[in-house]
Amino acid sequence: MKKSVLFLFLCFVTVSYGQNLPYDINWYLFQLDYNGIAYYPPVNNEVPNVSANFYFDIFDTFETKVCDVCLDEALTIDLVNQTFNLSDFNCGQVNCANQDNQDFQDIYQSFFKDPVTGLNNPFTYETAIVDGDGTYPDQYLLFITNSNGDIAYYSDTENLSTPDFDLSSIFVYPNPVGDSFRISGTDSTILSITVYDFLGRELFVIKNYQSNSPVKMDDLNSGVYFVKISSGTGQSVIRKISKR
Picture 1 (cartoon, rainbow, N blue to C red):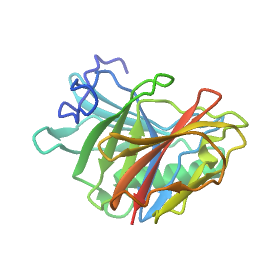
Picture 2 (spheres, rainbow, N blue to C red; picture 1 turned 30 degrees about the vertical axis):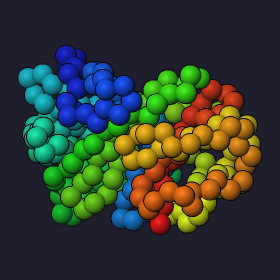
Picture 3 (cartoon, rainbow, N blue to C red; picture 1 turned 135 degrees about the vertical axis):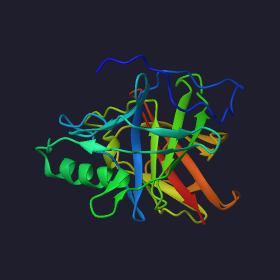
Picture 4 (cartoon, rainbow, N blue to C red; picture 1 turned 90 degrees about the vertical axis):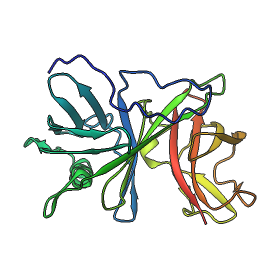
């Protein structure tokens, strides 16, 4: 399907430099909060990423993919209230060969369309910019919330794993966070950890983090934060945390 792409979200949160986000963004899921549980998309040969795109042409279209492609060509948008409704969200009949991938695909599709109750309209959206640090470029974030309060978190950066930096196995714990959190799940050197608030504003950076060392959060207020974990191999991943 070839379309001239004009990105949907015009009401941007501009935090860093007072500039609008660019058009033609390909979004990649990095966390899904569904029914009170945080899920991380698989990263493997069958599912290198979980993508999502919005298009404007003859039809306003939303498209997303795990193994199967799900498509809605009857999207309705309210730019003032930053909401959209899916009208005819259809997925094909493609199943994942890997059962873990299939389990995630079932949950992800249910975020948009419950198999019993139907479409989870309306969906609200927010965006933010995470500043780069000179080594890594600015990163754009998109948050989509369905009518049940479940949230899908996307970035414009495609996070590809290597054997020593398996992105799907990196965990920030405990979550919710009390006075501190720790990071586990990688044998690779972590070049830096950067903590941002929900609007993408950088709060602090820790260089050369040692695995499972505590990162103090006791001087921050309760709320939602993002932790950007950057490796020495040039990769990064973002995890959402909540501070009690």
